[in-house]
Structures are given as C-alpha cells and as structure tokens.
Amino acid sequence: MKNITMWLVAISLILFLFPACQKKDGTLILSYSIFFPPTHVQAVVAAQWAKEVEEKTNNRIKINLYPGGALTKAEQCYEGVMNGVSDIGMSCFAYTRGRFPLVEGLDLPNGYSSGLAATKVANAMIKKYAPEELKDVKVLYVHAHGPGLIASKSPVRTKKDLIGMKVRATGLSSKIIEALGGTPIGMSQPETYQALEKNVVDATLCPIETLKGWKQGEVINYVTDSSVIGYTTVMFVVMNTNTWNKLPRDIRDTIDSLNESYVLKHGEAWDRADEEGREFVTGLGREIIPLNEPEKAVWKAAMEPLFNDFIARMEEKGLPGEALIADIRTSLSE
Image (cartoon, rainbow, N blue to C red; front, top):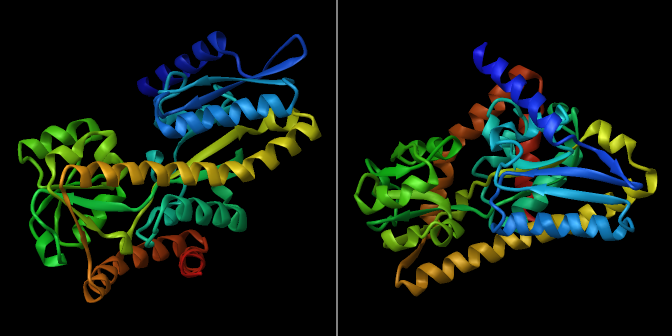
C-alpha cells in the first residue's frame, strides 16, 4: 500500500510539473517518454519520428522528448501513458510480464532471423489479433530487436556443451537456457561485463548488438549463431487514448501514414546495430559458430515445451495462443 501511495503522489507531482497535452500559441505540445538513453539508436529514430510529425503537421504538433526514463521508468511507461503522465511512451511489454499475456507469444524463441523480420511480424500480429490487453491506449506501432544469440567464453557447438554452463539470462531468456540444459543467472546488462570477466558466468544470451554496446565482446571468445531459436523483445510505441481522440482527423491520418514507414526504420536500425556488433566481435578475433542442420533440429525441439506452456496458458484465458504461434511461424517461413 505504501508503494502504491508513493506512486500516486509521484504521478500527481509529474502531472503538475510536466502536464501532458498542453496547448501553446495554437500548437499542441505532447510529451514522449522513452526508456532508451538519448544516444541509443532507437531513441535517435524516435526523435526523427517526432521531428517528422512536427514538420508534416506544419508545427501544429510539438513533441517534447524525455529519454532515459526521465519522465517514467521503463516498467512504468505503459501505465504512465494510460494515466496521462505522458502522451506517448516507448518501452518493452516484457517489463510488466503477465500484463500482456497474448503479446508474450511474440517474444518466444520463434526463430527470428533479424530485427526487421521480428518487427514486421510483431506489427502484423498485433494488427491482426488486436489484443484486448492493449485496448487502453492507441498503439502507434511496435518494434523488436534481432535474435538473441549465445556469447560464451568456451565454445558452444552443440546443446550438450551448454549442460551446466552458467549463462546470464533473465525472464523469458532464462527459460530458454533452462530448456537447453544450462543454468540461468539473472543480472542486469551493466553487471554482465564484470560477471563474464570474473567467471561468475560462462556466457550470456543476448542480441549481438549488445556485445558492442556494452563492450561484452571483449570478455567472451565465441558467439553461437542460435538464431534458429532466436527470441526477441517487442517494444511498444503507444499514445494516450484521450490525446489521440483530441487530435484533428488530418493529423491522425498523417501520424498513421508516418508510422508505416517507421516500422521499417526501427527494424532496420536494429539490424544496423546487430551488424555493428558482429563487426565488433569479429574485429576482436572472436569465432562465430554456426549450428549444423541436425543440431538446429535438436535446439528447436528443446523449445517446444515453452510453446506448449504458452498455448496452454492462453487456452485457460480464452485467448488464441495456438493460432498466434501458427501465424508467426507461417510469416517467418514466407
């Protein structure tokens, strides 16, 4: 109860200091809470989107950016948009696991080959299924990072090599490591470099861009291309429903049209970051290990219990989990 009271007080203070959806000299001023730091490629793309919205609406809209969780923390961003703390927000659905049950199926190890592929599929599925869990906001679009891979100090060429290996993994990724026979160790990205360096963990499960962004490529020796079971993390860009409904029709149409192009821009940005990560680790002389076809089949089979569990949980809730997974797989095979 104390934490809830403190959160409500904080909301009231934020609304007083940073009132959402203001109007000044005929210009509607919107606030945009972004959990990425301002230098992150996705925060940069978000800033480009905001600038284009302003330009294409002839500056009838002004968007003030609050990156780095300055307005709402990552796990509070969605609720912050719902409650009007910010007009727009970008963060990860996974930060409030259980809040978005059907959407969780998008993060599963579906075998995403790239950030662009994951981003396209995620947008298509949310558009098709229109999850009830997202009814409280206007979904502008979503985007998703490239496949999580295994970066390790000793080579991982088969599933057997992972047995007993301590792997930095959290949330969904911890379940992936358990299914492969490894031992997941939960920790934040800032802690991972030192943990690898001091042999607290033997490996980490992450998108390859992380190996450059957090310099973890310096303290691993191998990267196993496990994209056959590549998972992702879907990130939302949503707007407060009341704010959206107050916008003139032509501005809403402009934003909707712009969003279509930014689905591609965010996906391509994830892939550029992954390519830079790959170049970083190969430049350090690290070996990138491909899985052979029989081994790919072994790894995929190990993931089936995760999918079965998801489908069973969705059936209990009356949600189309099985259809969603089938659609994702069909989309990725096309």
